[in-house]
Image (cartoon, rainbow, N blue to C red):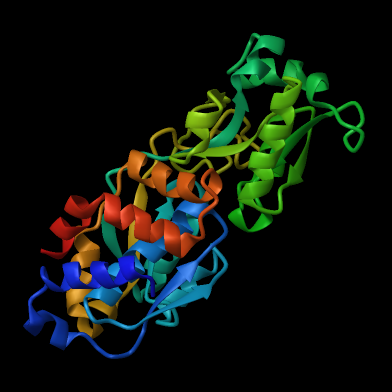
Length: 313
């Protein structure tokens, strides 16, 4: 570990009673790593806090949908970013099956949906209406989509249901899945050079909103059941004919055995709550400053001492 981590460890130990630390198991707390920057940095932030408390921590690369089953079975200990729009269904299914617990919400409001940078609106002034976007579909055509518009969706494992929405609403678009979050940022950056209209999957909080001002496409408003009941939404014969929740939650989840095995760490997890701005800053350190995730976590911890020490006090 770098010197900063050593200092961090000393700082955490000063705030955690030795009796509480002694109660935690010596088994590693297993933290999953996914494929977007804020989750990776946040996982390292929390992992370093746990290590400072005397815990062993192990990071494992895990599918962002399958992780809830892994937590339920105890193969993974926790999840720090349960996004309602992307993972709500998988999370709810795991809760119903048992073995996983809801550890509360972050102080952040999330949104995940189709998005465009503001120069796109200059070419399609009816935006953010989805009907207006569809009328402008030809503006987004590429060699691979022919006469139809191209929508760059998130990676396949994020299950954003872009194709289902296109079909449910009869949109003149072809859905292409990006390989990673970095591919989404590259698409926006490439379009910026010549102000080319582009529509991609995006979410908040992340660093992109500060770099490229833009707007979410306004689809029919989300209704509970839009992903499970065809009667919900404007198309009575299809699912996913609504936009995603405009004020979604960002939750934490844990294996039900975590509290018994690592009571001090679990107590800290209950207190942890990141804001939109804090999460965006974590992503910025990697996606803009090009830091490694563990280094970004160290920097974030050093710059936000009052925030995390309150959780472990």
